[in-house]
Amino acid sequence: MLLLHTSDWHLGRSFHGTGMEAAQRRFIDELVRTVRDLSVDVVLIAGDVYDRAMPGVDVVTLFDDALVRLRAAGAQVVVTSGNHDSAIRLGFGARLLAAGGVHVRTEVERVGEPVVFDGGDHHVAIYPVPYLEPRMVRHALGVEDLGHQPVMDAALAAVRADVAERRKHASVPTLAVVMAHVFASGAEPSDSERELSIGGVDSVAVSTFTDFDYAALGHLHGRQTLDHRVRYSGSPIAYSFSEEHHRKGAWLVATGPDGVSSIDPVEWTPERRLATLVADLDDLESSPEYDDAESAYCQITVTDPERPPKALERLRQRFPYLLKLAFEPRGRRADAATYASRVAAAHDPAQVTGDFVEHVRQRRLNAAEEREMRQAFAAVREEETSR
Image 1 (spheres, helix red, strand yellow):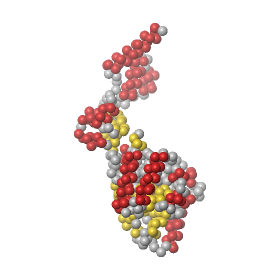
Image 2: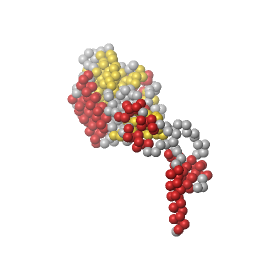
Image 3: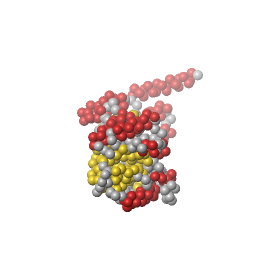
Image 4: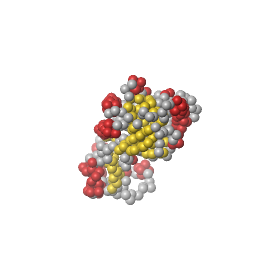
């Protein structure tokens, strides 16, 4: 059988204020094409289907369309909930959906009940483990201690018990695949994930999953291998500039009677690449070094000694997809006095204003600007005197 391990779709998410619906539709197109071209049997979605607990109607419609297309392409789908999802809302209609080949598991009480697929000479039992918030689930799992490790241990104890029972009575080999939305120790996070530290220690040891035939993890947005059988698929789309060098895609997992026979990367082309640029404004405007970034989503840091005027407008002439602009003047000496102490010591309103402008723009007023400012103050004083 062929399983396609995905996670962290985050449907409905924006990227620095830019809507990602077109990029997400493009990803779904590539996903469906992959399923059809490779004859994938089962698509796994290991949590964070949506970006928020109450997704918009258009976002729910997008996911509904994706499920219909995946089924039409020949794959069944197994879904569990992540920390961004509402388990109750995502799990609505799960029993009815299962009859149509879409298996949504979001209930803690059912972690020991797999979705079983018949591969002819072997069975694949997939155990979807929803995101386990320790404060919310520890009593249901019979756990006294707070923390992600104790609740995951308890959930997987139920899984292991079911695996042992099935293998005892099975006429063909049974492979055990666990899906879990969790932060595994030693994995590399990105800036776009929400921390899982509320309610206890946030990480779970990799060894927790190594006795299963495969562990399809979700939550971290970079595709990575923690152990040959324990992997993150990562998000299919970049959701932060820290993911600039990620290769987005999924894992294609082939199974047989002897276990997992191969695990291969599947890669998808992003709608638009990311670029992080750091230079003086003149170089950014004219250097051919940055030609490739003209069509990319850009994060730019301007390093001129003084903040240049109209930097955003000038840069967007060349980089229309500039999403984030910062200023880090090279060679700038940190002011020993805080801005508050400088204001407290100043008596001249013009000096206070000049210091404020310098603090915000990181450059002094030029002669013309200072002349206009002083004229404005003089006009105000004259008006007050004439009253």
